Image (tube, rainbow, N blue to C red; front, top):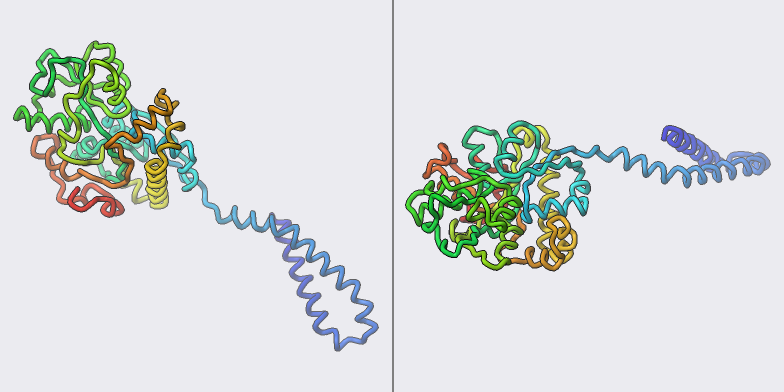
Length: 366
C-alpha cells in the first residue's frame, strides 16, 4: 500500500508539473515547445497508466481502512424451536453482516443461562421472563435488550384420568426445565386460580431439559406430564394417547414473550456499538424468519431431526410468532411479587428494560 501511495503522489506531482508547462507554453519559443512535447506526452501517458493501476488498490485501501474489526460476543441459548431465529442468523451469517463474531453456548435451562451471565461466561442470554426477574430481584445488574418469540407452551400427559391440575396426586411428577422457569410460573398462575395456591404443585416438579422430558414421557417412565415448548409439545400431541392438560394462554390469560434477550449493564454501557449491532442482527433474523417460514423450514429441519414439511407446519402453527416486541414483563413481575417468587416489585418498565425496548412494547401489554 505504501508503494502505491508513493506512486500516486509522484503521478500527482508529474501531472501538475505537466499541466503547468502546457498552460505556460505560449510564452515559450515554438521550437522548444515542439522539442518538449514528446516528453510531456510520455509523462501524461505514464500518469494515466499509474492511475488505472493504482485506483483499485486505493479503493481497497480506503475500504480496509474504514472497516472496523468485528465485535466478539458470546451468546447463550437453550433448546427448542423458539431459538430458530438464532439458527437462521447463523446459517445466513446475519451476525457477521452486522459486524459481530459470535461464540455460542447451548444450555438446558433459563437458570443455567442466568448463572452463565452472572459469572461473565457469556455476554448475551436468551431466557424466559421469570428467570430474568429472579436475577433482577437478586440485584443482578441486567435488563432486557430485545423480545424474542411467542410460542405455544403446553402441559402434556399420557394419563387419561388427568384432565385438570386438580387430578394430579403426590405420586405424580411434572417435568419442566427448572424451578423459576416460564413453565413453572405458568403452572403457578393456573394453580393459584384452580387450586388457590401458586405453589400447590411445586412438590411434584422435576427439572429436565426439553429433549429429556419428551423422551421420558414417550417412554412413560419417571414422569407423568411434561410442560414444554415447540417442537416437543407438538411432537407429543401428534402421538396417540397424549393430550394437553393446560396451555400457556389458559394460564397467563393472553399473549406474552416466551423469551427475551438479556444483557448486563456492563455490556450495555461499555460496548454500545456491539449492543446496537446485536439488536439490529436479532431484529433482522426475526423479521426474516417471520416472513420466510417456507424458506426457513429446510434450514431448520435437520437441527430438530424433523422433515421439512413438519418443520414448516410447526413454524406456521397458530400462536407461533417471531417478533422483537416485548409483552408481559410487568404482569409476570406483579404475579411473582404477590406470590413470593420475588421480593422487589419494579416501579416501571424502565427498571427492567433498556432504552430501545419501550418502543417494542405494545400499549397496555407491559
